Length: 334
Picture 1 (cartoon, rainbow, N blue to C red):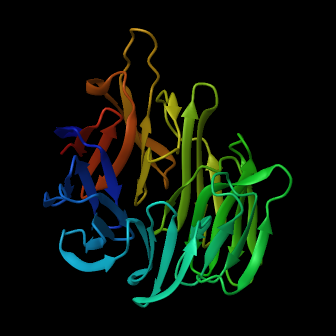
Picture 2 (cartoon, rainbow, N blue to C red):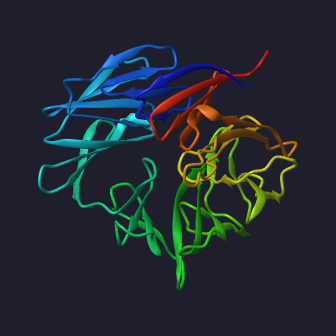
């Protein structure tokens, strides 16, 4: 791929379904190079397809074109979760004691304190016993916690990963032993708690692609070899194997935001380790999930000795942010 742009001071990339946001200081820009300055705002965060900026007790709501579409109010707001659409949301607020304000169809419904769990959508939520540790047990209720639907116990020595995927009427999650990659994938009916599918998998650190209904993982090292895992949630099918490649892959994993699936192409990063004074180029590449072949692997000598932090593919361009807050933009060679 050909390097077409390099930006400095890029603190993070926010990925959305049809766009992404680049943050540099208090300036936020979208893929169309439109931007907004949130200098006078205390907090800026996002949920679903919206950006939120707080000033005093106001939470201003912006779409991805930076048009203000609404304003919510709460004392000392620190966060918000949009549940499916902008009329259903939960505001996290409070100066000394944290509280959560539930709104359904724009009407205040309930206030809670110290939530430990996951708000899945307008119908379902999960409750954890410990907000700081991976859940070993959890229960599922309606959004306002007026009815418990089912409970799940992982079993002795087993815990869940931080993957909670709602797919239609099912919840998909993974369990494993602490410090182990391998574990189980569980597909459970949200209403009844009946397990629809449960299968052993070699890696529970997965990337979810909503459009295709796929969970993927691609990992490689000089010690553990080269591996891929592709899970079709709807068809309940798994593909596991070794990618077709002659390239040397040294430190590839699915942690954080180090991979991005676009169509059949899984873009990945290889954070090659540097030792002592030897600054080695880090690498990025593309694995085709249909042909099971690594289509290319490319070095980035400008970031030798560094690490990739995020990767996003959008409108024929690949965006790679390093831990040094450099943003490299590539496009396909003609």
